[in-house]
Length: 137
Image 1: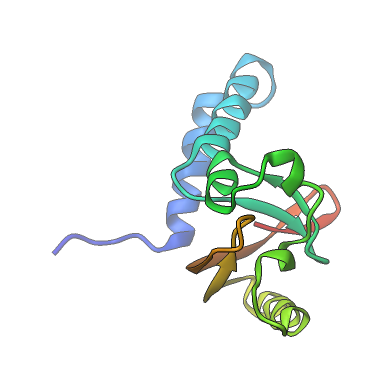
Image 2: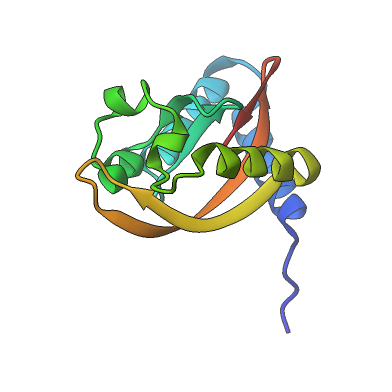
């Protein structure tokens, strides 16, 4: 039976590969930044980066398609806008509590599109550090 690496090993392998291929600074670094941006922007899943208060600071093309908003519209929104439930604040507070303990979590629920259709969703969240700010990916 093949051995499966844990998530931390996978991350470390990707990071090591990027470090070897990209190096520190110079042309390689720029190429890696472009590659990572492309992976985010054109990835097969909807991806968001948001602040702890729910404000969306970045999203990808699939997020636009999934929710029916343009990127410009999404960047003016709060992630709680997509929860059709009346207890949006409670859902968000529970998410923040889980992330503060585990740094990563999965939630199942429903989202609402711009056209008001509701659909089931399984979303993975992870806390990330960017400069001095803690963000949710």
